[in-house]
Image (cartoon, rainbow, N blue to C red; front, side):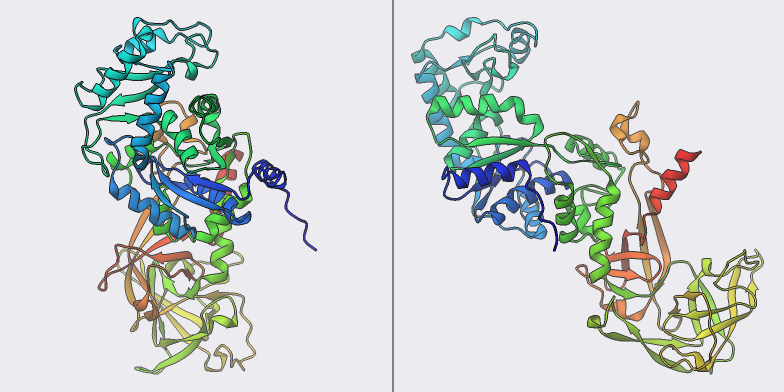
Length: 556
């Protein structure tokens, strides 16, 4: 009997709330700003919010925090929805903070009428200077004493477009000596004359995140508003707005964001990588975006499993990238189709095989019999991996070498008789003889060999480009290094092989399928592929080779 998994602290809170009848059901939300692509850190938040609602029979809203028209685009909205669907979740309602612009404006008017908000003409620099420091109280300015009537007129004029950007702001009137700097009369509305992707030019004032966040939660009756730890100082302000407006009380809870080794999660830094040409776009398979993971061949299940394994905590820590890759290997091992591909081909000629003869051999399609078998063409000339031949073999070498015998997977045992070199000394052909009685599944030869290698029939092979992706950074924490984080970029993070060959069954390869190139790793068809050009991305190696390299470096 398996041990029951313990609850995380948010589940404890929810179970207590439901048990005490505080809520009949829970309602969570995922509130991304549509100003970029979601990354693996967002995946953790998605799995948490949607996972909680699924576990406790509740619902999750998808709400786009679209309060900054300058950086937001409809294209980002669509990519976010695609990412969530791909991860396997669906939302109860698709909402936008811009849906509530009229309500939020009226909330601001409400605060003014209560003497809890005022229009400030100060510059951003003046506001910052008068806010004080954590150890020194801020100072009231002359605009703080404006009358309610004056503030109502000025705020209406802000909405009417009379003023320029930055000319005035609306601030909450709380306490300029508060110990929490965020409570020192925070800005709640600013002027931005910019086209909004949904409301067009209907508005020229926009609410700040801290004003829109809690009120949007309240409007939707969100029961558990879950944020990352950096929002702990914001919770007091979140609660203050809800209390003063006397609206539905949503509650904010904070958990540790995902920090992962060999990765950066900052949108600003990820944008640098894209705009400065270190990667080929937001979905470059070396990026930590969900779209990049999808293009690289990750499965939704592997990411959900990873998020489940790392759990929900109240303290920041670093998660090793190898754990994510472990979850991926576990999933791919169960579902990837087994195929043969040769990445660095050299010709193998079976000298005693009949000229022009072709056999159809049965090969396993997957890890068990439920995948069935496929027919694979076999002939006199094959392609094998150059690394599977050694002219002067070292000890315990069980692959091809002069006089040695190996099994060709799902085919015959062959013996290396000779090899051919070109003028540069490069091996161009390996001559072998085969044992006719050694056919896999029908072997009566009585010969046992220790080595098995993969192959592709030369006359049936398909040409392919193969992209071998590795970690983008050479250090576990790129942001912890002195100097520019881009100095730690791994120059070998992408190797492009243009002369690979793959078996003929891959002519029908699809982007959604996952393949194990036998002995080489897990791969998927890239979105750049065309009917006349197969392109495969390495999703992950068969084993964690990187861990060995790191251990080697540390020992030296």
